[in-house]
Length: 210
Image (cartoon, rainbow, N blue to C red; front, side):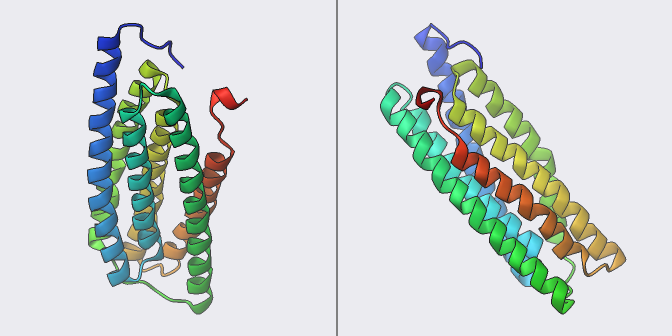
């Protein structure tokens, strides 16, 4: 992690940039989540519904980071926000992993085929382009202001890009080739990744705790 900037004006400028990135994260993921949930429920797509819930979790993390950046000058409150928010997001990820796994296995057992979802494919492709850029920008701010919390949240944004890629493959195989098992299979691929992210969030400790 980079050394903390010594000039208050410089740090304030980077913190302000971080806030703008969090506002963008919250706005984009809110829209992404609503579209994914609606398209997923209409098409009966497990992977797409799971992707929508992940977007809502990203909104929670983004809002928490926005609060942390607003409290940047107060170290105790900043550390408390990191601990509480990471625990909440960690439990949400674990719950989501269980939900996706159960529904995916049930669909495979019943041979339940979801309808094709063109909006879902378009949404995942857009996210695949937006999320890596957003993650990179937030990582840069995290390095400059030495924020472990923002670095962790940036990893979650990067994780969303991975989910987008998995989702695109599953939905395209279903839409183009009619492989009914592609969607639940993609969901099963998503589940351990989501669970691992939740475990990492729960195990995370700020440097002052160690």
